[in-house]
Length: 102
Image 1 (cartoon, rainbow, N blue to C red):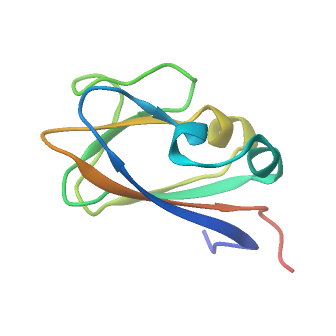
Image 2: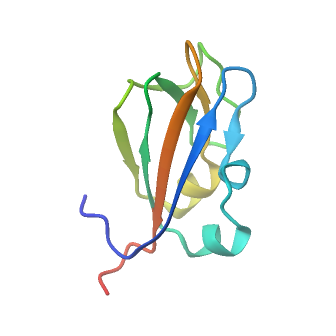
């Protein structure tokens, strides 16, 4: 996916104890209401994530390898994203996009 009309990027440390929501990462409700896509990149440690609003754990949820990335292309999935680090803290980078060519 070509990232289109990206408008905010956040780097945050994800820990191994508590799953983070998009708001915990630092995105406002107004920004999330505009976001149709998100590019998520794991840091030095892998992460697990859920798109349903449920909290992943270190052993449950979709697995994203260290330094891997995934594009989420649904407004609801972007809003409901929750993630947690596996095996140690991971600096996660998330960029949100309106999903439109400008």
